[in-house]
Image (cartoon, rainbow, N blue to C red; front, side, top):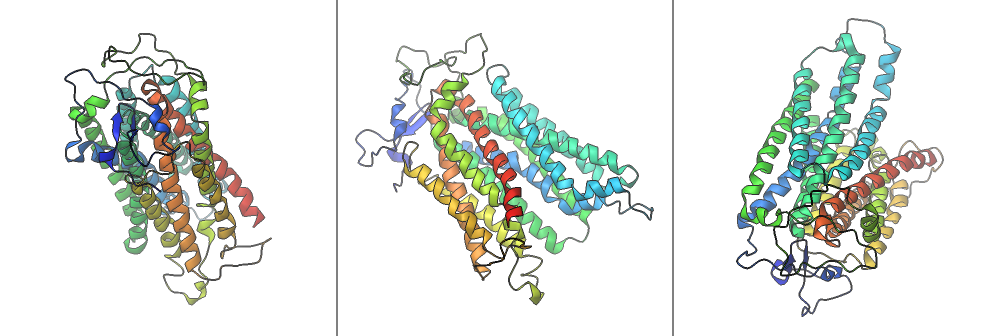
Length: 475
């Protein structure tokens, strides 16, 4: 495994690579295919002073997923709202019971369908709607939704439970769609930056998950009022979204960011046999886009990123196959002892917090270690090796068990170790694959490729979630 120092790398406007004289050159260095863009005389490549752009991208990564995570984390609040606790009625409305029992399923549909549709729409809008409009519009809409949800926390909705349910599902669908547009647009933009900035954005997303896991633990340990917890969750999300709007507006003021955000030529449609284009010294650096705002060429992008796409889809397939459907049903073998560790805190700690921390560590390590490379056979090999994690989790103390009665790993240490492996491998390998994607295409296709990479993630999550229901029934 090679440890890559930023000082030993050359940067192009759309890639980071080692010079030809490097003793660490291997087949993994497909990024060498991207020849160094020739900057115009007098235009020097600026440095990211005080890591300002890195911090902004990291914060935007948090902002892209934290609101959605908080929305899902407030599970007890939704149970309280839909169980009609404030109602003076003595009977239970069957429709309200249906809402309560299947709320998570409704939420999954309201989350998944808009994500896929918005990813497709975002790809079509790459050359038609400016990036700034897409980013600011999505952040603003999410902010408005969370302001509405914050106001509704203290409103007695017992007299209009079904109406509140419809509002909640609509809000979830809008949040899911707009966050997808925001995340894929920002990730596409980082395709024109050095890989460390893509890594910052991806790691920020993992930090968002970690923060929500910690918040859920604090809420579980200290909170006595579910509405107060939900108010804290939603208000924090709204404040952070406002903060993200300010950070995005600040980004173009940084000289470092302006350099990489400069306009590029309209995308060139190339075939698989074409050589990647090289910017000649005579080509103006600030070449404007063509007035013909066409849809980016999808087939060449899919062909160029097919290997990485397989890795991403299978990575997230295995992850969502196990987490959370299987992992959250693994109980402590000492549950009968009645201690808080083996009952109340076992799943939140060994599943949610441990997974998110391991995932964050895996993503953050890619800031310094970037191996294997995008064309190395080791990368898909490691991805396929994660299949072994499925039986490891199945033979932990998963409950209830109907068909497979044998519990092989009879210790609470095993699920903690397996969850760490699941999170760390997911974070490290997925970040590598996601970072490489926009770097192996021409710079003018980097943003569209970022959207395609996001689609790979979504597809993997959908397939894993669908098959997880089958796996649970087999156990």
